[in-house]
Image (cartoon, rainbow, N blue to C red; front, side, top):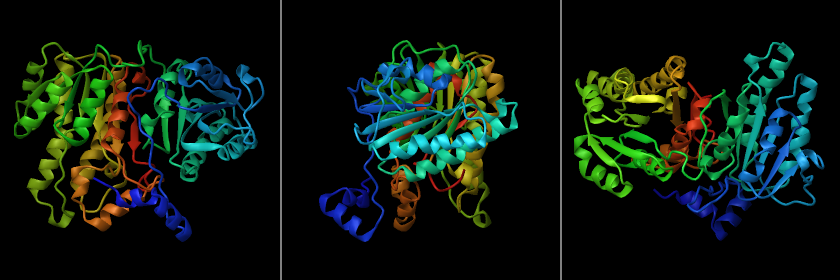
Length: 451
């Protein structure tokens, strides 16, 4: 669906009028295009002199062909200055060595000049150590302060930029490349203000052009919208896809499966025998499970019927629980597998008229957090993706004023695309993202709603 204000604000006449009136001027986001060879198409500035920056310096040439440091010849790189340029497309700052309040000024000293030299749609990643892993309370305080800084910077960066904070556990340094390939590239165009933790993980990606090669992925609710985009992206990254949806969607499902060289499967996931049917339909096992299927039945709680409540809870929450358990118990979901649950920012912030929907999505977030530890013993990661306002058929049906509010109430001033959610799911499906477990990744343009 077209965003007319975004189109107008990026036209020649629109730019002049928007500027003259002081109106919001959202930038059309850059998204991943086929044929790119490196995650960063432009200059990358690496700052900080800690062990995490040192680890990043070892693979900079695989991220970009133009790298600079904040200090001359640090890591063998030339120093970048705003006067000499070039425009920056990516910033990485190692803040892991900041151990007390007085040292936090290093954040201002690095970012203040760098902000003057940003290009269009820049990507920023700050690296730190998880506060709970530190014994010194002053060091833990300094590291926790990074969250306020990164989220505030995400609201100031403008120009279609993104800012993330990655807390890197001891021994997880070798997982940085996979994370930076996602967060410094257009694949994370609509992801900002996020705080994630990386833990050690033995799995590695053999071929970054096809990181899911040799994997088999199941996507529920795959016939259209976000589900179809997820299937397409997983197939692009090398996975063999099994597409599942309700029998009424069979025609579209079959067509998509044929185009992707995958297989279609029709099933009512709320049926009593659905878990057994799914296990039987996957005799060769599965590596990736994406629970995308979901419905809405909106009413205020005072008018919420049993039918509306139960339908949403059964499809959105109970079915993923039962299906995943069946796949695990039968050994169908292989060791080192990946499970991704499609939650929502409604499950974080709540939403008027959606007590049933928000309850179901919050339950998925809770499932990821509670189940991750046990599944991690088999090398399986379980995470949730929480989309914000995404341009789909569902959001197209929202009344105009509410739809416009949803689009603008984020740091990027626009809605996301199904591709944005799909890219996040594809990243969480990679072997290296076993380093991320039991967490929630919001794809919401840093929405003003929720945490």
